[in-house]
Length: 179
Image 1 (cartoon, one colour):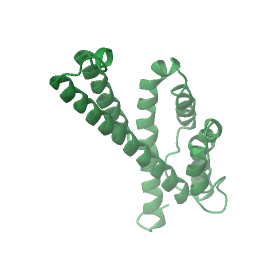
Image 2: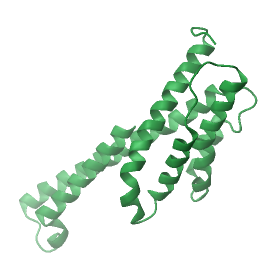
Image 3: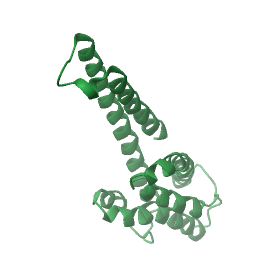
């Protein structure tokens, strides 16, 4: 997930550098030489690859949210997997819903392991809350420059914790682990 995001950003940055260095941004309409055509084609390719990498990373993260909520469905979860992911696609409402979908998962997961007396480590709710705040900050112009790197770091940490939690619960539910 993080690799897709970082890789996509790196490809988009490389495209921007090529555009600036080749001068396409300044004289595209006036004088597009043969070398400029290749630079433009390279930039378009890098932009497409960068967007594809970012979309792939985001898709994997949405799949993780879905699977995470699916594994704790015992009748006491605060939302369903479909709602957890689906409502993140509603503009502006997603600023609220990220707290329910991601931070809320950490809370519900911790309650789930308490209810079922599962001997697994709890998720750090404050880290998931920090992720949600940085998620919103990363969408605000100029603030996103400050929030971007911490956002990606906490994305990796919380995603890793969630993957470990989901895998341990799946193993427990399959009967391969002891409570």
